[in-house]
Image (cartoon, rainbow, N blue to C red; front, side, top):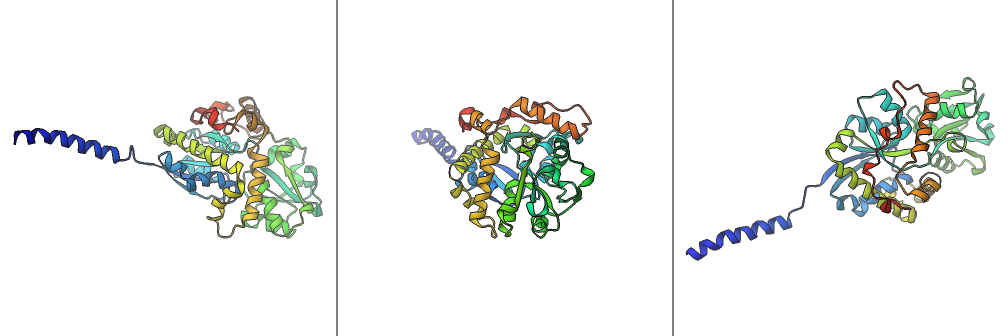
Length: 341
């Protein structure tokens, strides 16, 4: 009996060790993420890691929701309703200035070159920026491209008093241009161009004035994070970015496969249309010479601070204009080797 009693502690230890071995190392961290718009081609890099299990492998339980424009994610993440999101970094700069008590930051640059555009029609007399004078411009108030209108105006010597701005909803923006109710619209190049083409507007009648080609020297959409979430879960933020980079690389390598992650979530989407939209985003906004040289996700500080100066030309900062490090936190980025193009 005494021998059996002596064995009991040993057996108990083995059982406890076995239980620990099969138990998960830690519970998955929930991450509520907001996109900037609908499930369209350019959202593929966020959705591929969800479908491939990359977020889960990093110990994350990620949910991804759509939004109604690239300004909405900023409000969602700032309020804490969402932990992370995808929004316009230029609007983020203005938001931080107007709300100094909410030091929300960007942690990964996705659109190294912004898709902000003025999209018009040759048949409506639009071929260059100055042609907008005397015309009607359809612009959704929460549109990230419209937010850069004052910079575009100044950079191209446009007399803004001669342009009629009509506040239109996102769903009717392209239909109104197609019907001739407005002469041009603000929007993301890959969204408005593809939508107009899909509505039967002849390609040779569509004019895309990419703001980046007309003096608007800004970065575009970035992954942003709630400051409280970042402070409490820094490893989760890093894990999210590691998984995202994997999905981004796969999307760039095989967009025709990656876009399936979008189609399965959007009942009205057509694969050929969303694939063209995704390829435009990859070509014009994601894979730029800067990204090829320095990898995905980072920023060039000198370029970024010049962009802040340009924002300051049309926006009066309440406080001093921010420095790059105050807006963009590079400490969460995956290693340079992981981010290499």
